[in-house]
Structure formats: structure tokens, C-alpha cells
Image (tube, rainbow, N blue to C red; front, side, top):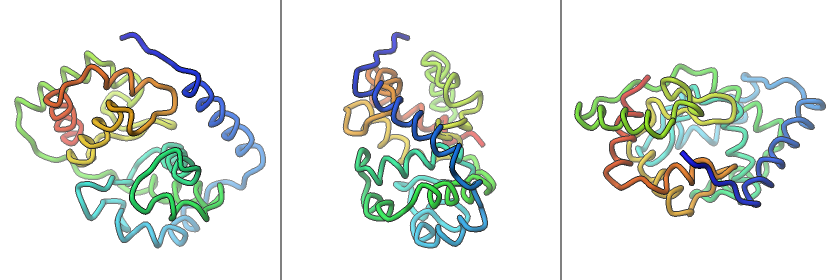
Length: 199
């Protein structure tokens, strides 16, 4: 798969790398207990157990901490748009974000969801062809700053993949945009069904 990185994407990677290095050298360790207190406003949509109240809202349970932190930073900086998230992230400090991320990542993962067996098989094949596991992990559990897709709601994944394909949602280094560009709606539907079926 040919990956295309534009200047904006390279600058995004540099920004997040610099942020990570400077934060790591000066920050207090993430505190999951403090994060639970700071995450109270998150529970109305994402659930205290990290399982969202709507299929259009992502599950945060067992998401990699760095992935949650980066998404919050993008919402705070308005690089990513999403409902009320920009306003909710605006007052959060970097430490608040790390604590909230530590809380959600400590929770048990969302349950696997049943789906059409043919679609799951097709999605698995597309995932293999597109090398999704090279970034998202062997069972799409996520790693480092890469989001967990396993057990995520199908509806949420479909929306996000279509937004990434169209450029409505940017990704940090252009990898996802490049991968999603050639996917049909049926491909996206199958991929989302497969990811949702994993635990």
C-alpha cells in the first residue's frame, strides 16, 4: 500500500512527538483515580464503564491512553470537531487529559458484537489486505497512539472511516486517509462489522 504524507501531516506528527517528549520529561505520572474524578462529565456520553450510551459515540474502555490523550488534544486545539467535545476539552490541562486517559484505559474492553458471518469474513480479508493490524495491532486492540477498534460500535466506525475517506476528519500522518481513500461503502461496512466483532 502506498502511503502519502503531506506537509500538514508531517507537521502534525512533529507537533505530537514534541508534545509527548516535553510532557514526559516534566509531567506527573498519570493518575487513574484522579482521572475518574476528572472524567465525571464524560460519563453522560461515554459511560462510567467506558461503554458509550449511543452507537454514534465511541467506547473508551481499554483504549490506549496515548490515543485518548491525543484525541483530547486535537479537540482542545480544534483540529478535530465532534459535537460538544471541543468545548469539553478546552479547559483541560495536559495532566487532566493524561489522568482521564489513564482511567479509561484501565477499564475492561467492550464486549465483542455479533454480526453477519460473511461480512465479518470480508472485513477480516480487507483488514489483512490493507495492513490494518500493522498499526492497530493483531486483533485491532490499538497500541500507543493508535486507537482500539476491537469492540467499537459498527455505526461509529462506519462514520469515522467515511469522514477520514472524505477528508472531513484528518489523521495525524496521512496513513489512514491514504488507506481509506480506496474503500467502498461496502468495504467500510464490512471492516466495521469485523472490528466490532473482536474483543
